[in-house]
Length: 161
Image (tube, rainbow, N blue to C red):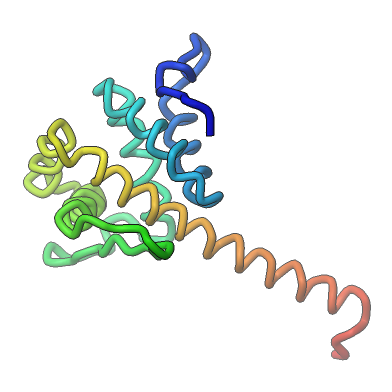
């Protein structure tokens, strides 16, 4: 990859949602350096960060009905690591607190994470969210592939009814 910086991507037409989606897309393509650049970009601006959090937690909360969780619920942030990749367990725990806090509308869970995002581990927390969101999307892509394959099998008469 060329010697790029997050500033090299800034354009007047860019927006926070694009940067958040780009981080997830980069993760799905195992382009971790561009995912990092995208997340560094959103971490520099509070408004961008809040929008990125909305995008990433939104992906992770697809299918979770509002008000369906009890006050003691915990939503784990899980993702697959590629060989040689490391994870910060504290960042994963904080990402889980953030997703759970958003789902429960619990400011007591969200507040400390927002504070941590401004610190040394902000990028690690955002990477955990982006990795988990990428894995979640991959699940749906896989399901879509299965459904399309089944559709074509029955539409071509392979499956007798």
